[in-house]
Length: 251
DNA sequence: TATGTCAACGTGCTAT
DNA sequence: ATAGCACGTTGACATA
Image (cartoon, rainbow, N blue to C red):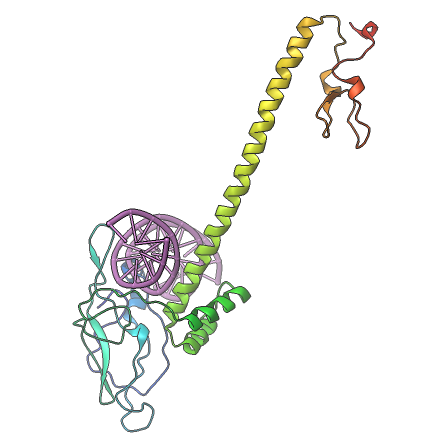
C-alpha cells in the first residue's frame, strides 16, 4: 500500500476510463483517511483488448504513478511505496515500481525528482483561468487538466501555489504601505515632540501668555501652526498662533 | 557559485 | 470520514 492510496491490486483488467484523482495528499492523510487510501486513486486508463479504446500499448497516466521517496526536511523518506501502473500490449498491470517508469514526468530513471516546467502555453492557459477564478471545483479541475494534458493533481497544485504567490505579493504590498505609514507617523511624532518642547519653552519664557484650554487647540493642516479653532482651507489664522494677543484674558 | 523561481510535497485545520 | 485549502518546506532548474 502506498501513501498515495494505491493498493496492490495485482492484475487489473479494465476498460478505458477517465483519470480521477482521489489521492490523499500525504501519509498523514492516508492514515487519517484510511478508506480513501484503500480506494484506487484513479481509474486506470486500461485494457483495450482490441476494442479500439486504446490505440495499442495503453495510454500513459501522468498523475497515476507514485513518486519515489522524497526526502523530507529531516532527511526522512516519504512516499515509500513502489507501486505503479504500466501497460503492456494493452494489458495494464500493477507492479512493483523500480523507478524506471517514464509515465510520471517528475522523476528520472534513478528516482531523482526532475523539475517539471510547465510549457508556456500551459502556464498561459492556467494564468488566464486563474484571472477568472482562483479556485476550481473538481469538474473544472478535471476539464482543465484534460485540456492541458496534465493531471488534475498538477492543476490543483498549480492553483494552490498561484494563490500562495498572490497572497505573498499582497502581503508585500501591505508591508510597503504600512512601512510608509509608520515612517510618516514617526516623522509626525518627532515633529510634535519638537513642537511641544518649543511650546513649553515659550511658556516658561512668557509666563503671562494666555493659557488656552487644551481641547480648543488644533493644528492647521496647511501650515501646521497651532490654532484655537479648527483651521479651514484658505484661512490660515497664523495671526492667532500659540496664544491670544490679549494677555488680559490670561488667568 | 549564489540566488531566485516554482512544481511538488507534508501537515494541520476546517467544512461538509 | 473525507476532501480541499493554507502554510511551510524541499529540491531541481534557471540565471545573474
